[in-house]
Amino acid sequence: MKRILTGLQPTGEITLGNYIGAIKQIVELQEKYDSYIFVADLHSITIPKDPKILRENIRKLLALYLACGIDPNKNTIFIQSENEYHTNVSWMLECNTYFGELSRMTQFKDKSKKNTNFSSGLFTYPVLMAADILIYDVDYVPVGIDQKQHVEIARDIADRFNKKYGKIFKLPDALISEVGTKIMDLQDPYHKMSKSSENQNGVIRLLDNIDLIRKKIMSAVTDSESIVRFDPDNKPGISNLINIYSVFTHKNISEIEEEFNSCNYGDFKKSVADVVINEISKIQNKYDEIMKSNQIDKILDDGIRKTREIAKRKYEAMKLEMGLGR
Ligand code: ATP
Ligand code: LTN
View 1 (cartoon, rainbow, N blue to C red):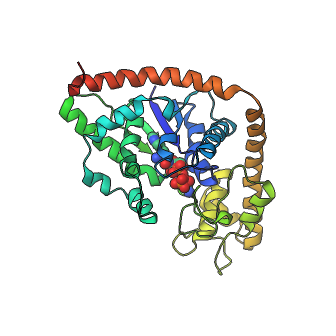
View 2: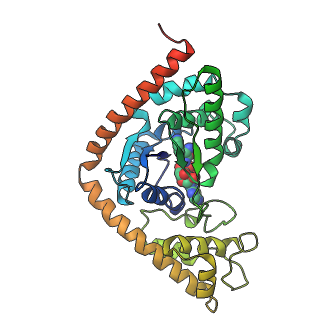
View 3: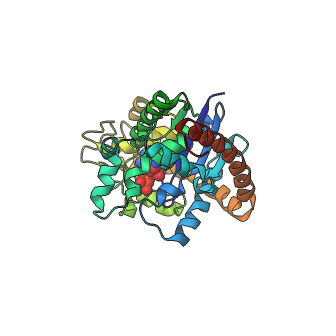
């Protein structure tokens, strides 16, 4: 069985973008792959975090994984920092990664621009991500398009390492979902909807109050043409809503354009809000139940036991080939 792995950062409550770009994909893929999903808490501290909030976010994210349909019987679920081999392996890979290639990462360029005093972790972040992936001999890494470059560098690092030290790693491929790959901010449809966005009105969070979700969709930025037509360059707001509607209804773009061809934007937005709310309210109900139960700890104990064993084997194999230790 082919293996997939992905992780989300506990940087805040997850958004509709994360749900569509990452979680929904895993829920489909878990049926036919050996699936690993984790909470990338070590990645989240590349930008300083309040410890108390971080710990709460880790738990919330895990509960949301389950509430969104990630099945613990079909997935190995764990927290990155509980598996110390990830950082060990990351260091060994870092010593086989060039400064130049990390400097070309667009996410690093964007995030470092926002903060002049950024940590070196922000720079080496893709190497830790490569360790997360390469430890498990993963075939595919389901991610949104913004992470594609990081999966590609993981592949380059693996290939270089294999050529230098012998075949230790499997070369992974990114798996990008076709529809709704990039959900845009509702107030600023030129930028992706992001957990850490400053303007709350453009971002739908899975735990937002249902009335607030409707309000955010109804006030999404559109254009003056008043025709529901998919044209991301000229009509990014409406195209984004079409994308969202398409994901939740499984209708394709031309079917949607036809369905709303004589509707105004208000009617279209109402339909978008209805389908989004229908799905999110089910998730919220499950989330409340999960938070009240103690199932998360049991799942994590199983996950860490299994992943530590796998990671230790890879780490030992790397050490041997690299001449480290006795
Ligand atoms: P941050 O604001 O902290 O950078 P983020 O919302 O961009 O967070 P990540 O934790 O970086 O989210 O990403 C988690 C997963 O969700 C990744 O696979 C990423 O590609 C996907 N993702 C994030 N934002 C979107 C989006 N707007 N549309 C589709 N997929 C997304
Ligand atoms: N960098 C990713 C989170 C992440 C990840 C991974 C995704 C860390 N390690 C390994 C896939 C595979 C992000 O910010 N979304």
